[in-house]
Length: 298
Image 1 (tube, rainbow, N blue to C red):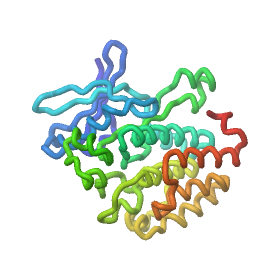
Image 2 (image 1 turned 90 degrees about the vertical axis):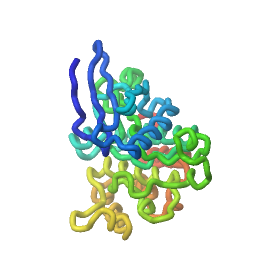
Image 3 (image 1 turned 90 degrees about the horizontal axis):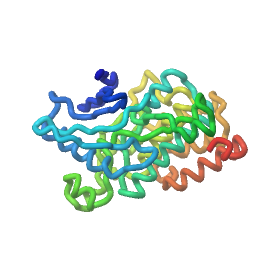
Image 4 (image 1 turned 120 degrees about the horizontal axis):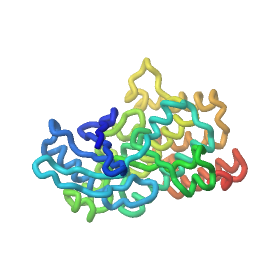
């Protein structure tokens, strides 16, 4: 049995990969040195949310192991890598492949919200894992990028809008608890500007912004931030938006896709697509206008 620690350790959580009888498994737990009441409660909350999300494009939770005073351990399948691994190795992604990723992730987010009124709030390439899908491999070939299935992981700071699920997760089943956002928690480069504003209530628009930033990074190979300006200041001043428009133009991204991405990362959340279903329709429409028949790729 071999051990391999992930090199990317997020906050207080330590994922571990190991092999048992040729089956590779990944474990996630709270690091012992960080196991205080707050960290344990946050991880318990994640496990409650995660355990209810059984869907093709959401990383599945196979089992929760009780380690007593050492907390809990979450067991899941092992995956070959993350979207960050892919981006780091390739830079820009061609348009059909970028839309393939966005479509998979969008479906996972839509399922979580439609089933349990859960909003992810920490969407980034590191939290999107991939595996190889047998059916897709048969249709597109073993070496095709689109033979992969991309899945949403890490629900640690998700916003729960359903009172009953809040109660199970250990939060007060009040209306106020359902609309609170864990502001200032997440990854700044992918966080919507309003997430930094005191009193803002999270919505689907928050996740759509993060997905839009990932879409932007896939098709341009970068993010709309400059080294001479702190990211939070860039987001709050909204200067990221004209920078994004300029980078999309420089990368010669087709106009329908440019308009869609800019709508997803619009400074005002009310100007973004208002639902996952509407974004899905807009994605189909933009790609049809750009590449012809969308069904060629899905």
